[in-house]
Image 1 (cartoon, rainbow, N blue to C red):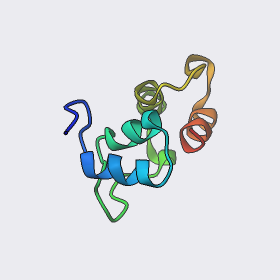
Image 2 (tube, rainbow, N blue to C red):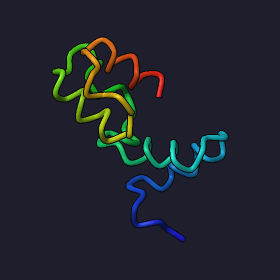
Image 3 (cartoon, rainbow, N blue to C red):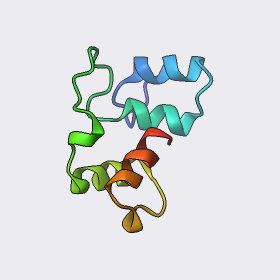
Image 4 (cartoon, rainbow, N blue to C red):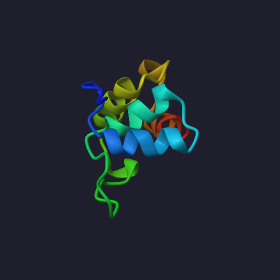
Length: 79
């Protein structure tokens, strides 16, 4: 049964099969570039701090308001 809150259901199911939690699988499957192959998204180093902050907000990273750009990148990569 499809979940209307999941943007990329196939990716969500594949991540769940790999052992990801429901929350983390949903977060990944709901990113704007979910399911796109070939590394189309620019590396975080090319993002503005505001873009990084918004992405951190979207994925629920705590303490993002006090982070600098390097810390935001690290938190996004290790979330």
